[in-house]
Image (cartoon, rainbow, N blue to C red; front, side, top):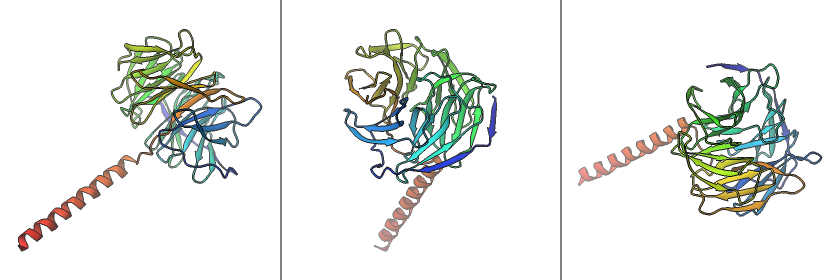
Length: 319
């Protein structure tokens, strides 16, 4: 397994947007990258009501975005020399971090980003002398490593806790352990999809950009179980599952966001277009503590229960 670490540069920018506020769990965040106007992060309710709009300071071309364990929004920001951009809604600041050789092809639907525990994962492509692969950033110290070798256009940390990557062919999927970066298995999707999302059972949901523009539901081996038309909306570019797996969204370059459930029983849509199109969208998730923190909390709870039990037993003995 190819893996290396490199020196990163970090820049922090303050924001003068006093109206910015923490994001609401269950809402939808979208990124827009216009040609002549400032790039934005928008927050919407699932029914399409806009909650807030935040200008991306020091923007280049925001692509995919993901919520990390701290409740911050992380952006794949740029093309040939992108930056990992993190927005902290409480401090109202943007932090930009570079990574040598990290890049993507100049296709506005490429550039995937996903979050897991203390890590942010980003796709990497061979646009220069770099080997391509997957870049993993650490949100605690903003260091990074590159692992695997290849051209990836999208990735997703499934609700099953594994990292799923979509290759340049847009049908080949590789599955990695996000902690060890070990390759676990590979399989092929039944169609060329532009983006993927994975539920707790390992089932894959894919979004077709061209052709029938379907939303696909496949089993853990990539076998097609179900599909639905995107109701005449084409150019699908991103897909995401809510934290509890009950809702599914698909974003389109036409400025539309479609919201449904994993059974495709209820499909609605809303238009996010202002003077630019929407390419990427994600659900706002509940920040998840570090595994070590969870263990400490469980241990503390267990210790408290033991102490309470001992006190009750002591009282009974007194009687």
